[in-house]
Structures are given as structure tokens and as C-alpha cells.
Length: 143
Image 1 (cartoon, rainbow, N blue to C red):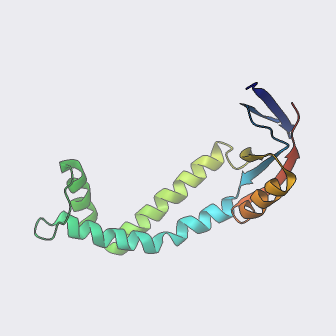
Image 2: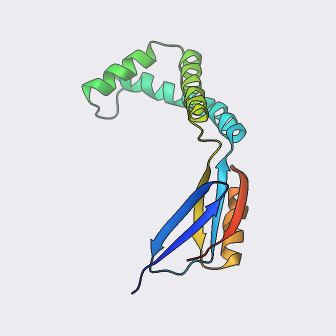
């Protein structure tokens, strides 16, 4: 089957796709820093559970799984911390990654969120993305 190269220009960015399929629309959006920050903070409860698991696995008497010596050493170090200190560190690491991404311009660029062969499919895709992405836009595709 013949391959077609689709090309879409939007706000100084170019999106390309070469495929045998037929596309009529492209959904793009920018990362939502507020949602990412809120998500990182919401992970605190998960990190508290992870700390309990690390404490269990750090102790040879309570260990349930096999780990590499490096993994065990990491878990022993984590278990030496309080659960709150561990969760605080992990959330701080997540927030630092978000800030590093912001500094690199990741929150200013548009991302390809999916190509669609019909407008209704593009609209469905865009609707599901709006909770986590900013400026979700449906673009017409040309060859």
C-alpha cells in the first residue's frame, strides 16, 4: 500500500506522520504544569505505602521477594528514614523533575496527542485529554 506523509504546522511547530492510513485530524496539547504539580503532591499517599514495603523488604526476616544487593541497599537506606521523610523526599524529587521540565520548555511546546481519521474520533480524543493537558486543539490534516 502507498504511504502518505501528513504534515501539520501549528504555532511554530511541525507535526509529521508517514503511514498507509488516512488521517483527517490531529489532536495537540500542552502539558499542564498545575495538574502535574497536583499529581506529584497526590503521590504522597503512595510513597507512604512504598515506605512500608521498603521497610518490610529491607529486613531479611520479613522479606517476601528476591532483590539485587543494590535494591536491598536502597531499601535499607529508605527504611532508615521516617515514612514522612521518605514521602517528602520523593515528592520533592517529583517536583524537581517538573521544574526541570519547565526550565527546558516542556510546558511551552505542543505535543502530538493522536491522529484521527474522522472528526468525531478527534473530538472524543480531545475530550479525554482536557483534564490533563492545556490548550487541547484539533487541527485539520493535509498531505
